[in-house]
Length: 422
Image (tube, rainbow, N blue to C red):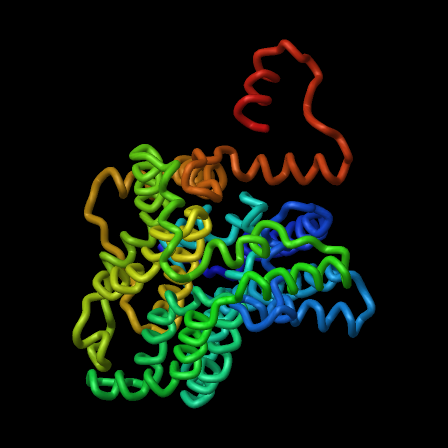
């Protein structure tokens, strides 16, 4: 059974998402220890450095509009995030989906995650999401292949200068390009992709071999302090201590087997609807290098693989899950929307058929899966619960200016609320 994504519930979901993004990004600009602000403070005033272009854009906007630097950062963050959500809605609104695809679309490690974990809201991966969404948007049949080729050729180095870890997700872009360009042989793939990704690759190599010096970092921090009364903290402060030179394995010092097991289960459960779809679907035609040489599940496994570098050398495992899933579901939607894969899903199981026929049971399981849990930001943190309720509750606290629910201090319900909800 299929339904169109373009319905009131999806529109309302996106619309509320946009309102909450604006509200919380506005709140976050006043927070003095928030990484989503600090990483936008990185700039080139002390010399070339990774992730400096974002800060330079924010500084330029602040000077041009004669506003505070944090206000400029807020405007950039909201513009990018709203553009991403709006474009996603228009891209998906006429898509026909079945029940399992609906579960995949509303997974708590996708659109809702930045609002569930406010620390992740406003981070630079949103630029990657918008960049990839633009790529698949212009990879539909009505757009000329040269347009998407030029798009990646010119934008990939720019995005790399803002957040260099985009290179780990170049394989997703490459897969789109292979299909769009209808490349059939390894030679065609190698030659075409080398040309298109050459500016991005050269940019990353240059970033890798020209780290910012300690004196340059000090100049950058003094500039922020003198010009904008901003300190180098969090991401800006860690710029030269946590580099991209494979020297951050210390992030595992505080991790143990429980943490790794927890995130294995998060991946298995969070990706479950999408991975079932991938395992059951297949390429409609074997007319390009990917479809001729790989099964659908094999290509997704290969696309997942580079992201393991993030988990190996980065601390924010919840964010890495969100980023990997976002690229995966967007790529799947691209394949589905353009009829590149066959979306037939036949599960010959009596229990499944009974489950599908029960609207109450389907709704209950869907709400629990989509709105009642999410991974926390860092590897050592526990799984968060009651996600949808917490978003409403925490937003209400800010809007109506109350601290917490404390009607009956010793009531068991209030104690439970304090311990497990707040």
